[in-house]
Length: 251
Image (cartoon, rainbow, N blue to C red; front, top):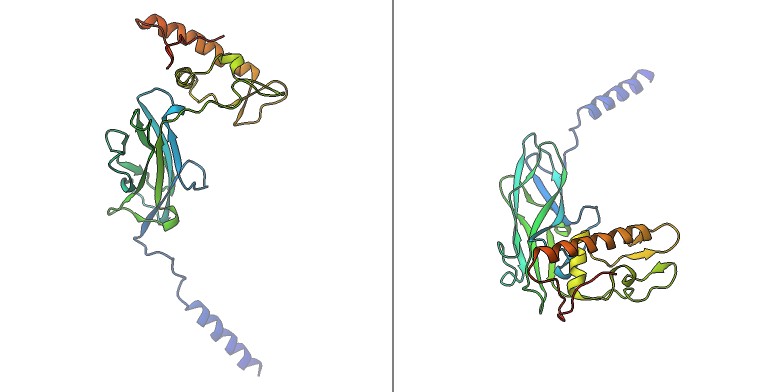
């Protein structure tokens, strides 16, 4: 009886050893790319690019992430994006944005890349949306549907921050550092400090990122704007004036 039981055990082990290796969910030659806006793992439904809240530099960028579905390669592989929806007559490649040949490096599964945005005044009266997707090639196919597009809304609309003229303790109002609000001044500040002045300036305690800054940093921004305004006025035949033809000044 013991011999029969032992024989059955041996046969069972041999049967298990002869089973096929588990197969991958994807063919060995499959490589799909998932796309989403931003640099973290959370995929936003869309992103608004508001020129009013951006610097006056001629070129800016929006970052997007890719992640490989399938197998990596020992070689660098290129891919491109293409418009797949939205108002492609209002948002034109070469006029409002630039796409390029992107490269996913060898033996990597994920990376971050830019879509370049050109400075434009075409969206002051009406916003427009464009949707980008993967242009499939011999290297990559489209990934999962939920991560297959990049939706960007272009607009150019100013909005005075609610805490510009009044902000209760423990905060300073923005006018303390930047003076009377105007759209021209707002964009000048944005260009100089590299971000739109929509942050809150904390009077006491430790600022909470990313929406608060310290009093010391606000003073630094104020002094930078004052010195850059002097430089601007020296380099131009006319001093900087706002949309109401009032001289731009800082306290």
